[in-house]
Image (cartoon, rainbow, N blue to C red; front, side):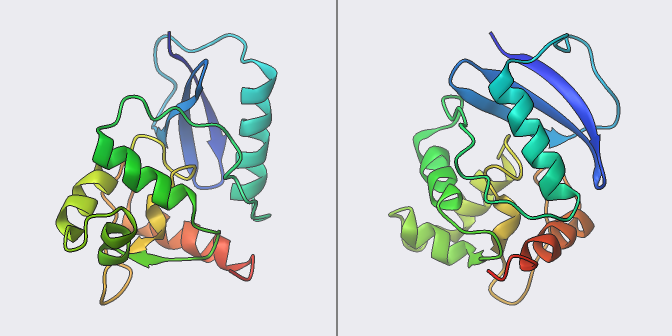
Length: 158
């Protein structure tokens, strides 16, 4: 059973969903929705605290927060794993991700996997950039949010 909550951040309201295995949903949301959890377990509360700290301008390495990738296809899961292995401030091109995911030349497929990413920030699809610059961001965000997240992470020194 997936439970959810939402919380306000400096960049906008986030909706977070979790299963017993980990965070399975993290996206920007306008307003609280139905079925929100009254109380979250301690590990989810800690994840929210760390996300708030990160988004408030104190960048964190969030790779140790558990995520649940069971809803993804095998290729989407592999792309997510590649992205989870990146460090704050690091960027990769779509082609780089395809190569690291074991599918050289599959940059377009990486683009589709990134577009379908349900766990923003924790599966850092904002770190994937076009070969000729930052590019857009269609994964439940805006290009401005992508730029904000990348700028925030640049404070870590890469």
